[in-house]
Image (tube, rainbow, N blue to C red; front, side, top):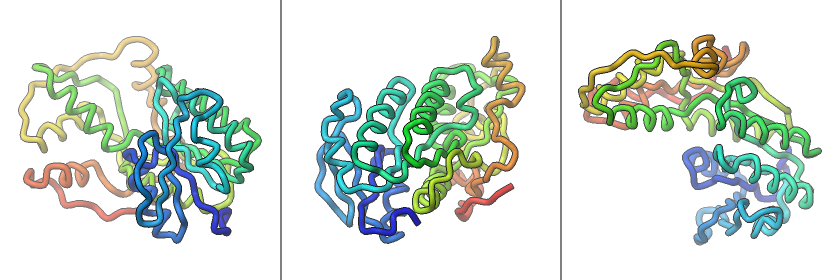
Length: 275
């Protein structure tokens, strides 16, 4: 275990969708946790919140203080617009602090899908890999939470688009959190096998399931996604590579939790399995 000392584990994005699961798991494993956040908040339950902003440029306002005495960093913060810049600044600060293990969450096929979000993730991956810091990068599929937001947005349209050939394999953020903590507390491993959900589903079917669970009725309109992006998805380039690990919490179970009155399938037990 890399964090055998009493050094706190630093989590960026610790208050986000993924971080809210990662932080308590680290605490349950017996580790003090430090969360880098832009909004001040008091320490609680073994979690220290350090105010800092990776978007402030190379000075990384508050970032050096957050990294003081830290050996393991889980970098969960980022978005398509700022991921490369924030990762570059975090890497520079982590080198100054002598961090011994940097764990990064990316997206499956970051190097293959011609979309801005994927390009930003791949650029950040390269920064981590070339940092000189021992690292682990996990590529995960779209979270159930993102799938639900996508379906909800499309469900607001009078005719809901049903993109032909677009397949996802959504994974539960709790399964991703469990895997990240496992990786963070082990030796640096470089780029590890992908983590995807238990099933490959068309985006149209995922959207239909969401609308049904939400009690909404909408007609669906089949459409063909043009260009390189459409071809990429039709060829399954976005799907997990052979040997990927698989989360066990299903989309149906997520919907049942989200819409408990909908009578959907009961929630599944957690965990990650290998395929």
